[in-house]
Length: 302
Ligand code: SAM
Image (cartoon, rainbow, N blue to C red; front, side, top):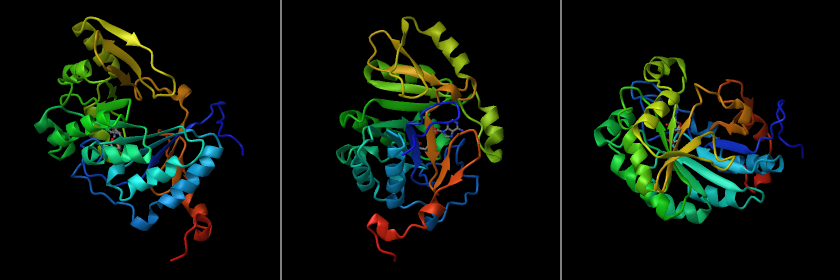
């Protein structure tokens, strides 16, 4: 089968799959309580069998890495069994997940057993009240337990995603960096991206450039060294404090695009292929897929 090579000659090896549009958190910059959501109807969401079919074809076309995301991937029922089936697809080298970590303390062991390789955990504040303010949910203690569970089950490298929010968590950057002293985690400070029109205001008001944060950190902490990170492990360059177990870095999706190194495509929960995060162009896969009789997936029509 033809390989996925884009018009710039880049081989696409990374597929990011949104398993659901539902989330148990209501982050102010992503899905705030005030925003009225129109969730995708259940029958419009890709079934696991359909996702597996897409992945099988994608792997033949050169995809080796899958990241499961959402919404919140761990709120989708049957996710562990789905990962077990995903793991059986020959040619897949790496299965990772981006999660808010809330259900990880109870699920990390079974996820690892099913074949999940590693997790990225999103956490924008280490202060319980502020965490509640950002996510709309008093979930910090459980997310912290989730990080411990991920480390214990070796869902590694465990990456911690922190979206930089001016006036909200920019006073906590030092605390996130200090987290890397004792824990072998990779903390990634992520620039807030402009998303839809409803969130444009808040996302512009709260934006801080990673460059600014980086300059301040370099002034504050001595003995920071730049560390090289294996290629293909995400668009972040990393730093390390002397004797620290973990590293920290920056994802500059807004101030410095890393399009030239992009090797990924996205599959939305409703079954559209999205080649670029900054484009609204999508390719409908579900419609085509649903023209195939279900017995081809080993299922019967209901
Ligand atoms: N629910 C999961 C989680 O919280 O990690 C997965 C989905 S969430 C959309 C994936 C990541 O995107 C999270 O780290 C989140 O903070 C980040 N994110 C969402 N909206 C963003 C924005 N406007 N700018 C930058 N990062 C954003």
